[in-house]
Length: 440
Image (cartoon, rainbow, N blue to C red; front, side):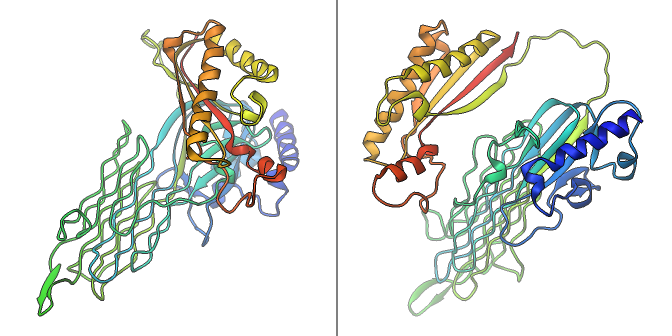
């Protein structure tokens, strides 16, 4: 009875969450659960979406509530869970028209695994879609979108990519010939036939997953038969095969073959899509990347573990607006900035810090050279302050990315550097800090 009451209170709390204010607030078990593979993924994708969101309720230990018995995939008992997840894979490149060759395979997403205690409450799953394949004729293709698990009431990130629930598709995963290049831990797609340095370069298979413990099968390149023919005008490419997609947790899509009438393969669970065949009168679209996924597995009780040295892990990632740390265009810390960093220093003292990585970012106002220098100088200022507070300098690295990794898009904040535009670009002016180590 007590559990029933607490569950009712959880549902009432869910109604106060902004994300639940929308008319559609689906339960994950009924909309996004693949029973065959025991994963939450996108079962019924909608055209043009970046991600799909649904909700889980974690109920207190004790008697199993009636709702949990009716909808077991949407209700979990509180406890420690192994959380595995991956974003969507990149789409495959479309085959190019005329003599430019087959499309490159899409990049496979980088999966991750963590263990977290899920206390009673409501949780939001944001599952990133796979990127669309390039259209026939060498059309642009999309990167996959990120995945996350957050506390729906507090917004706290539990696992996955920060900001996945507000992510906007804006990047290119693979061109018309080159395979998509994966981020660290993912896998690159193979290039399409005829797209290498040699006019008749062979199509390539995609890469295997680079994340330990995950072994999706890389997509194979398309067959190479019937790739060219001679005419009075000389050698003319007739049909070149597409490259295979990179692997993730799931497999990469196969590249479309020049020698058969088929379509480029679709990636599976974060795998990249296969590239389309290209050439004279044979250009076809690339395959879609596999959608992201989340798998939650409750940890079982086990005998006393063997005492081993703790493995350093990412203890904290956060992004701090430079408007708090510095005056506009400056790299000298303000008192308010030092106070923010003091909070970080206190947390570092509570852990065995192995590595601290500081990355400065700037907005696009001014020249690239100036913004690069400013981002580096700000990162070094943060490092110097941490060192002054007793953090070992050889464990801190500082770098600047200038304006190369904005949060805003080119369509945002248009116009000259007025106060309104400067305020609009504030998300781009930031310092990202990652702490790797072990808890004391």
